Length: 341
Image 1 (cartoon, rainbow, N blue to C red):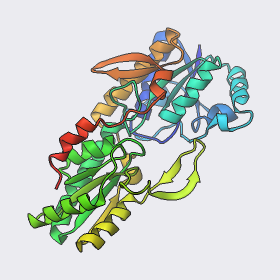
Image 2: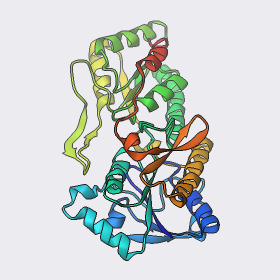
Image 3: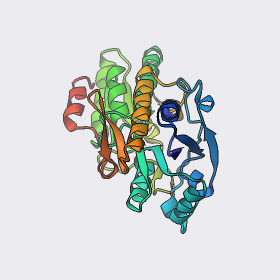
């Protein structure tokens, strides 16, 4: 059997570990051959490929990014996209696809499965917002990077008696902000799931200064004030209809300065959270996802996705995993609120 592999959407640490595990198990155990599709769904659309054999995946375990490249291409937004994929898979002799991606990439995989393409999914998103799995690889690395940044910012904030805002990724879900904010001792955490009151944020800032400490506020890029909307970088949308977010940290800094008279500065971590080597946990999880994805191909579990439940890897339907996002439970947020102010 010849199996295609692609990585779509934003890159994150652990993608290469999945690719490595797929090949390292699939070649010797099942006798499969593998073909890498370049740049997400652009690969099968345009027949952009690279060979994937055991020599090609040596040394990938600690390497960030993805050797296959990625993109946010949506074949369903292209007139003949689906037919081009079918034709290219047939001409290349590809019997099945292992698709590694998040909500959008796996959403495409779900629809292709419904149209008869043999697809197995592997969940990937640093936002940890995919339903059906307890955790996704890349999330732990992003949280560790954000936590280290918060730790470093505490000292400079106190040296200059400033309020510092740390803007992290999280379009619809505040998992990174919540985990990193609690781990880093933030004085307020603002997430997309719960609209924030800017006056309350300013009271927390002033309370912290009264104790002779400088406040640190961690905010998800998709967080929204009670009386406003998301802060957008531009009004442009990508192929999946997402607008580009950015600027909530600067908004908070301006409001805090004008309302409290205290100096405020913003640090936007941005793509730093995606880059570099994955943590040990993400290498472990990504590797296990890859091993079980190959088993799913062997067993013909088309239309399913690997998932972590407790410490077990299970297979769940792609339709279940992509029908809604996994967001922060208000009860978890309430635990963090104890430390605000």
